[in-house]
Length: 105
Image 1 (tube, rainbow, N blue to C red):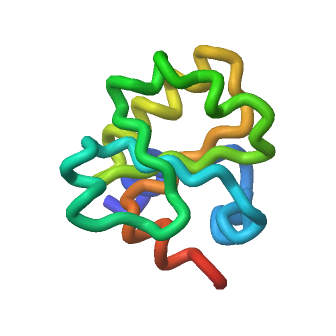
Image 2 (image 1 turned 45 degrees about the vertical axis):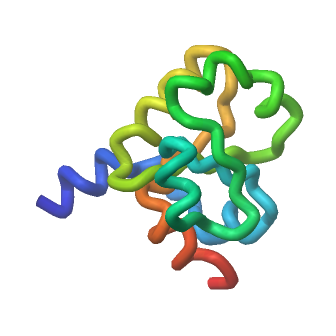
């Protein structure tokens, strides 16, 4: 089970996601606006998954991009969309609570 989850939320090579988050990554919550309003990671930006293609310019020039959501499924889709639009610095953070737990580690 752990191997499946690890593959699902894996990123490039042996990167340290906590370091990327704490080094000022662009943190993007891809949940709906209503979900975001109910609780979110301080400093994150809400761009719902279905709006990602309309806001590609927001991602340009970012050193690293970490996408996340409620369970990791939508963030995986967001990562796919961004990579297929030429972004190579995208990481799936899984859940927003997971990314929050990485802050200041």
